[in-house]
Length: 254
Length: 162
View 1 (spheres, rainbow over the protein chains, first blue to last red):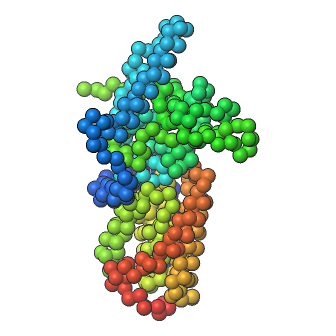
View 2 (tube, each protein chain N blue to C red; view 1 turned 135 degrees about the horizontal axis):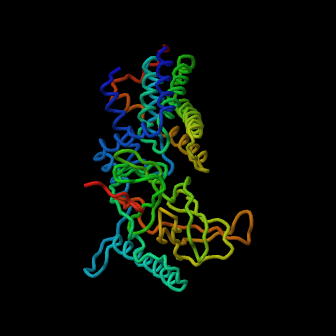
View 3 (tube, rainbow over the protein chains, first blue to last red; view 1 turned 30 degrees about the vertical axis):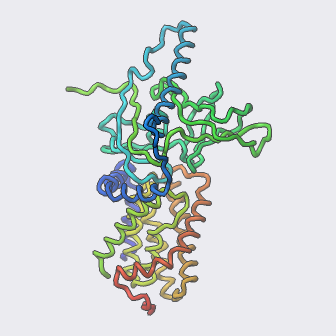
C-alpha cells in the first residue's frame, strides 16, 4: 500500500507541467545557494590559476573579455560595411540598440550542460534568447519560470546552434567535455579561427563570437570532409554572472 | 530509524552531489549508493520510504530532467532491491558492489526512458556515461556504507532477514 501511494505521488510529479515542478528545483538552488557555492569552489580549487606578478599584465578573465569584445566588434563592423555597400537603408546604427541586456547571477551547480540563473519571466526572459558571458555567447535560454531560468550551454550534447565559420553558415552541436563540433566541412578552417553565433531574427541581430577552432578531424563517414572541434572563449567552469540579450523588450509601465 | 539524521544526511549528500561532483563528467551517484544502503540495512517499509525520498532529492538537482523521473526509478528499484535482500542476504562487499551496479544501470535506464517520454532530449553518449556512473558507484558504494551506518546509528552486522 505504501509503495502504491508513493508511486502515485511520483506519477503526479511526472505528469505535472514542467513550469510547476521546475519551481521546486529553483527553490532548492535559492535556499542552498551558499553551501552549493562552497562545494563548487572546493571542486574547482584544484585547477591551478595563474598569478599575475607583473603590475602591467592583464588578468586572464579581463583579457578574454576584451579579446571577445574586439572580435565581436570586428564582425559587426564588417556587417555595417556590407550594409553600406548594398545601400539597403534598413541598417541599424548599433547592433544591440533595440535590446535590453539583463544581468543575471548563476546558481552554483552545473548539471547536464545547463546552468540556472536568478532572473525569469519578470525580467522578460524567454526561451531561445541568447546568453553572454565575457562578451561571448555561451548558450540559449531553455526554460523560464518566475524567479529563475535555465540556460542550455552550447557545449551541452542537446545543443544545436547555427554559427558562421570561415564565411559559411553551419550548425554546431555540443559534445560535452567543454567543446562543440561542426560536422562535415569541406574546407579545413585555421586553428584558432573565430566561430560566430549566426544572426537570428528577433533574438540576435549581429554575429557575436561563441568559440574558436581547437582542432580539426577527418569525418568518420567521409574522409574528404572535416569535423571541426570548437572550444568556448570564456571559462564555462567559473561562471558567476551572465547577460541575457532581450531583443525588443516591452516597455514596463511606470 | 532516526528520521532527523536521515534528513540531514540526504541534504548533505544532495548538496555534495549538486556541487562538488557536478563538475565531473563521470562520477559516483551518492544518492543511489544511499538507496542501496538503506535497502540493505533497514526493514522493507523504511527501505521503500527512503528510496522514494532519495529519488525526490535526486529530482531536485537533476535539471533539466523533469521532476518525478528519479522519484519513480529510485523508488521502484529500491523497493525491488529491498525485496531481493529479503531473499538473498547480500553481506559481502563484492556482492554489494554488484547490486549497486545493477541497480544504477536499471534505475538510470528507467530514468532516461521516462525523461524521453516527457519529451526531454537525451544526449547521444548518455548510455556510456550511465555505464561509467554505475561502475564508479559500484566500486565506491560499499566503502561509504560504514560512515553512513555510523551517522545513522545502524549496526552493520545486522543481517537478519526481515
